[in-house]
Structure formats: structure tokens, C-alpha cells
Amino acid sequence: MAGFSQFWSWRKPSFRGREDDLDLEALVNDMNVSLEGLYTACSMHSDTVPLLQNGQQARGQPPAPAPPRLPPPPMSPRPLMQRSQPVHILPVRRLQEENQQFRTSSLPAIPNPFPELCRARSPPVLPPGSLPPRQAAMKLDVKVFTEDGTSRVVEILADMTAKDLCQLLVYRSHCVDDDTWTLVEYHSQLGLERYLEDHELVAQVEASMASESKLIFRKNYAKYEFFKNPKNFFPEQMVTWCQPSNGSQTQLLQNFLNSNSCPEIQGFLHVKDLGRKSWKRLYVCLRRSGLYYSTKGTSKEPRHLQLLSDLEDSNIFSLVSAKKQYGAPTDHGLCIKPNKVRNENKELRLLCAEDEQGRMCWMTAFRLLKYGMLLYQNYRVPYDRKTMLSPFSAPVRSVSENSLVAMDFSGQTGRVINNPVEARSAALEEGHAWRKRSTRMNILGSQSPLHPSTLSTVIHRTQHWFHGRITREESHRIIRQQGLVDGLFLLRDSQSNPKAFVLTLCHHQKIKNFQILPYEDDGRIFFTLDDGNTRFSDLIQLVDFYQLNKGALPCRLKHHCIRVAL
Image 1: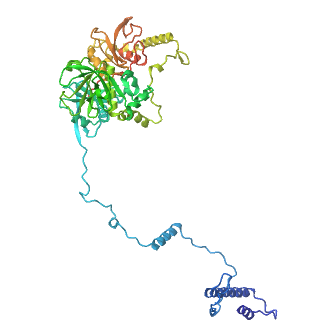
Image 2: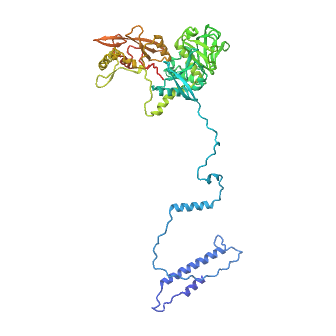
């Protein structure tokens, strides 16, 4: 403080006269300079002398000599007023770049592990021959036949499935893709045929076929019908379970699809001896491990069961003409053919069922036990595809005949007809209403020099469900080939009456025939199958009516047999 008092005594103003006024500005400048000098002296002293926590000097250490005092810097004239000056602010991008440069320069240098990738700006090019050669997809030609004998050669890939080839043929033949088209493996010399599963590879199947064998493009409405109505395919007396079952349709299918369950099909079959022409009626049971027959009546004890055939390396076929070619007791024959057999019939296991329902039960159980969930996945593919294509559409529902009711729309609002007599009369009135719509067709049906008959009698020949002049046996064969499902039908010319037609219909796996007769009324020709109660001007109107109404038929017309030309 001595320096501070001396400084004040040196600059002490005097108040002697009026002419010596007090210079306040000079006094403020002197005070600022003295305070700056004092702050400098204190900071230098604190840097050289260590202090304790209470601010006192440490004992045992001599005080550091005081630094020489510097003279005060020359004073510059201070302006009376200072205004704020604009400050240049760097852009944010420039600050980020400087910050990044600072960080990069502060980090240690890391060697580049891939210097060859940074030399050229163009992307690196691999030298020729460095990659393995790409194998081209193997292709082969397949010849496919139809029911009318026409054929077509199709180039396919080696990994093409039967389902893919069917879709390709549907596209090329301009057919309706309703997921019922299949490929048939037909052996003409052996008289065997079977439907290929959708997941089977066509190339592998063709490689195992003989030269005279062929693939046929055909409809099959009953391919997955057992998933919809399993009780129609598996009678209760033929199915046994190793565990209790509630008998529902869902439980029935789950037992077949579940690999841990052990369903069993049992019953009597006619079995042909190997190398002989004789047939024996044996008690047979089908399990996951294979097909067995009992050597002692209906006993299923292990010591009485003998293996007939294995399921893994075999496929099940249906006999085209069991009675004629093999002398079977019935025409409901089936065959278990090993995959290694081509034309030899020595290793074929020929079987024969009592009726068509029994044969369908054995063949369906064979497919389910061999493929299991693969069949269900193939069945669900069309439904899943429709769901993905139209996610906002209504779910597909199977409407049974029991859910259909008679409706009356004659008034302003429709009502349900509960009285069966009134419902029948309404159906007859609706049938007569079709007659009024035939006026336009009769006007167009003028005489033609090429066809002397009217248009109403020949227009049905352009429809797919009309098969012309075929025999009764041929129509039954077509129905069986395309699936014994309810509502499958076709129309043909009558062999007994040249002016009549025949409706061949499948109901409950049985084939029935209904004759369609011409009916004359007021000089006009109509067609009827119920003795004139319901009359139609042509067969197209008749088919359209019975597709909506059961009428005198056991069921409605649902699916028609069709033949296409590739």
C-alpha cells in the first residue's frame, strides 16, 4: 500500500485557486491505471509464493523477491463515448469444417488397409476368370397330350413343378384358371394312371416313365375335395385311431396330417398274386409304415401281418380297365407301383375294392400318409394367393345347398318363402318365366341351308359341357376321370332317341342319367326333363336354370366336364 499512497501523493491535486479546477477525467484515468498495476502485482506475487488453504504463506520457505515495478504505459486519449461495432460471425458450415479439421489433425494417423481401392476413381474390375462360370438353367422338351388326342411340345426348366406347367398350359390354351387343372401320368401298356401332385418335378417324373407312357392335361375337381368333405371319403367302419377321437371333420384331417398320430385304414381288398392270374380276398390295413395283409382272418397282431408294399418308394395308381386287362372281380381297381418299375408288371401290387367309395378311401389315405402337410400346403396356395391379391375382399365361403332358401321378390321388398308348397310353385313359375325370354332366340332361329334345324336346337353345340355323340360308358368314364364330386355334369346326344339329349350327373359318388326330351306347345319346341313341368327354349337356358335351382335333380349343376385342345 506504500506504492499506492505515494502514487496518490504524487498526483494529489491542489485547490489553491479558482483557475485550478478539478480535472475529473484525468483523475478517473489515473485510478484505472493504478488498479491495473495493482492487479498485475498481486497476480505475480501469487504465482511465485505458495499459499495455504487460509491464504497464508507456507512456513519454511523464503519469500520470493518482488519483481521490479514497470512504469505505467503511456495513456491514450479516451474518447468521450464508445459505440458498439459490428462483429463478423463465421457461417455454421465453416465452423463445422474448422472443427472437423481440428479433430482430424488431433487424431493419430491410421494407415489405410485398402490402398488399392483409393488409387483409381473408377470401380474395381475383377479380371476375367476370377469368378466361377455361371451354370445355365437346364431345359428340356416335354410332350403333353389332351383328352381328344392332340399334343403339344413345351420347353420347361428342370426345376418346374406340375403346378407351374399346368398354369403355363392354361395360359397358352386360353382356359379358365380355376386351380383344377392337373397332369396325369398315363401308362398305356400297363393300363395305369395317376394325378401328379402339385409339388412334384415334371422332369423327374418323365425320367421314370417308359417311352410309350405320356402326360395328359386334364381337369380334376376331386383333387383336394377330401379337405372340404372328409367324411365322404373316409367311412367310419374303415378308419381306426390309436388314440381317442371326437369324430369331427377337423379332427379327422388333423390325425392324418399329424406325423405323431397313427391313423389306420382297414378293410377287405381283392389282392392279385404276383406272377399269377388269381385274386384273393384278404383283410388289409394301411399304416404309415406300409400296406399289410393279415394271414389269419381279421387279426391285426404283428405275427399275423405281412408287408405288401412300402409307401416311400412307391406311388398309387388307378386301373383304367381292371376287369378287361387283369381279370379283376370289379372295375374299382388300384395299383401300387414301385418307382423303379417301368413296363414290367411282375412287381406291381394289384388291388381291387368293392365299390368306388372304397377305392377313393384307399387312394386318398395313401396320399395323405405319404405326403402329409405337403398336400395341405398345395391346397392352400390358391386361397392364399387370392388373399394377397385382394386383401380387402370378402372371405371365400363354401355355400352348401342347405343354406339356400326360396325368396319372393314380387313385392317392394323380398321375403323368405317358408311354406314348401309355395316354394315349389314359385320354382315352377320361375321356370315358366324362362319361356318368355326365348322370344328373341326364336326370332334369330331362322332356317339355314347348312343347318335345317333352328338355332335353339344347335346353339348348345358351342358349349364346353356338350360332348356330342358319345356312349353311356364314355360319359361315365369322363365323369370318373375328372372327379366324382357332387354337381359334376355333362350333356350328350341320346343313343336311343335321336331327338333327345342326356344329362349325366354325379351325386354322392354315383353317376346318374336324366333324359331331356323335346316338348311341343303351340307349335313351338321346348326342352324338359320333368315331363313338361319346366320347359326351356334351348339347352343353354336349361343348364343356366339348374345351376341356380335344384328342381327335379338331386343337386344343382356345379362343375362341367371340359376338353381342351392344346
